[in-house]
Image (cartoon, rainbow, N blue to C red; front, side, top):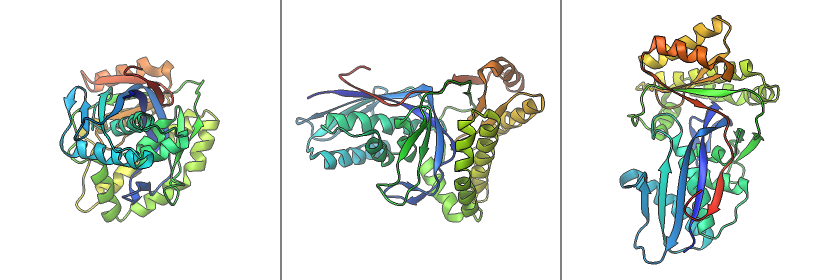
Length: 328
């Protein structure tokens, strides 16, 4: 029973994934571009065991049950089908990301699970094949196979909807300051929220068209190391995504008053000459795209605006790593 362990890092979409064209294959309505983050990651160890009568899944030393467990076992069924594997599996994960709080914990979780489970089942998948598999667990996980900037092409079927690296080694100054407004699980999960917005917001299709049109513009901004252009595109794309939620029927919202304080603070700092831009996923926490040299000014402004707020610095992170054994 050979054990394999994978470490995958979370990613933050600069151009968002928000809605599925196919809910079974997890095909998105938009092509998305992300930045993988070094500080937030998931470690997962998997081995198959003929003595088991069901999959054994733990997260942070707690036995997983309910919907979370069901998602993992369905994903393992895909791996078993690909590999001709009939045994159940032990899955032990340690999450170094606040779970379900808008920090893309599912991306690192399913990327790590894809890496460890496929190797434990005897599969030797290419990065593209691993991305395609990870997508079936969580769409954003397709991008966490790669380091640095990655692009998930929406494609039109299982084969073509896959992520690829844009720039994996980043040697210029860019970071994300994660402002943790709330690290508790959100009331509306991403999967339900995106499909409700897609089904009921009259502005959803317009957001899709605008987002897809921005892909080559974002690619150019990244190639030019243009943090202001990257930030402007990312902030507008995120705000427009959240606008589809606000115009859904019934409307729903992930952002809190404190979230808006941070977003407005970014605007104020830009007026003072600081390159800082906000992006938000399905949760209240705000990520600030910025330069490391401006960290002190930004964090001081945050502390004054929201006393006691927790800020985590995140820098560009690496691609998935898979090793034999229980430790990475």
